[in-house]
Image (cartoon, rainbow, N blue to C red; front, side):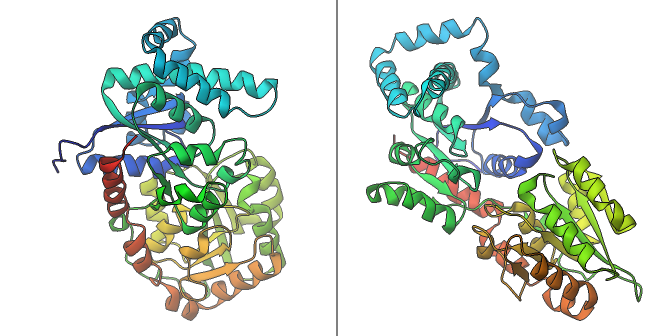
Length: 407
């Protein structure tokens, strides 16, 4: 689809991309490109091949401009010379870097690194003719994006996710970044409310709701999986195997349920895998770990799943929940951040308090033992995903923001 002439070349930046945990960025880039947008991929750090589990990941990794390796190369001196030839913008960028530093000598050293990276990135933006830079998340890569945009004299914007974005909002200066951004794409009303809390009301009009999304057509239409009488219900978890995902609570809940007929499949990897496998050993073949799987493989697994479960302690609006609902699966998820904007309690699944083993086990048992309840919830969440979380629709909204952005 041809775009209006004023649509800029858009640089996309993240701290480390592509990564298994950032398929939402991949989908967004591909959806924008499908609309005709000229997207140039940038990443602060290069990612290892283990993070490239599909052809699109590999293609994005191959084309990405990796800022930190370029900053550590002899060619970085050329970026300094380029910056010195625009003294006004360079001086303003350094003042902005000083203004947004965190307290302490260590933070000052890091801020100097971010300024150096910004010089390298700004020269790259100038070389490729970028007219806008967009960053995902609010931490260090957003600092680099903000500084580089000032030096390159182009608009910048960022996507605000959570929960990590809100752990240290003062250090990462959500107030200044919101004030200087052409717009902030907030993935949920919850994220927008947090940005409002940490920024000046004069800039609240820049806070736009742009959901992360999925392609609903890639997922099933809510067919109830065939199960032989007495067969265990199939539960699925997909995510990083880290403490924040609450898997230890989920395993405690399964143990509490005794002989309730269900089987849990865990897809993903992470620092807690070995610990969780040891913890799950007493549950025998009721729990299996499969490691990472590609998006198309997850879609196929959702077709054969009865219930999707996500017991996290903190989330934004999990894309994996969108996938499960798009596939027509009932879900059990914790009521954190923006999850309730996606999941309707008692309609498309159950919402439970985070860390509440008793309630989690009760809701899982109700779904495991009642095919009728599962059937009633099957397909109930798909309409909400189609309406609010279709990546094509959300990307068109984002593209219009890029087109009208002003520095």
